[in-house]
Amino acid sequence: QVQLVESGGGLVQAGGSLRLSCAASGSIFSINDMGWYRQAPGKQRELVAGITRGGSTNVAESVKGRFTISRDNAKNTVYLQMNSMKPEDTAVYYCKANVRPRAILSAYDYWGQGTQVTVSS
Image (tube, rainbow, N blue to C red; front, side, top):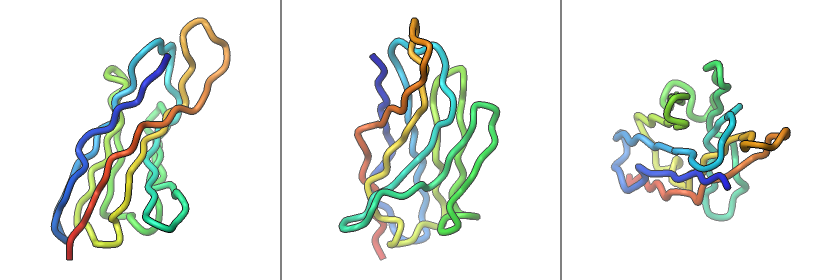
């Protein structure tokens, strides 16, 4: 079994910052891509930022220059540093990891449970 646990969400004023963390645990052989998604009420889930095992990143245009994704492979953890936050960043944020479990030859996508981020104006 593989579990992803997010932390760091909460309430912040516009212009403020938050840092999300997502730690993967369980029977893990390796982790490939990791990423952060978000879903606002009434909207589809969207990619915020992704990062490869080697550290290459891609960031949505709507957050470029404000959000930074990073990871610590030794800790199986991915981070999302969110600065200059706006009310439109309000959403539930989910992490996703493409994980190859131990004793299994294939990799699968796993999701965290989500963490609420609310930005007040």
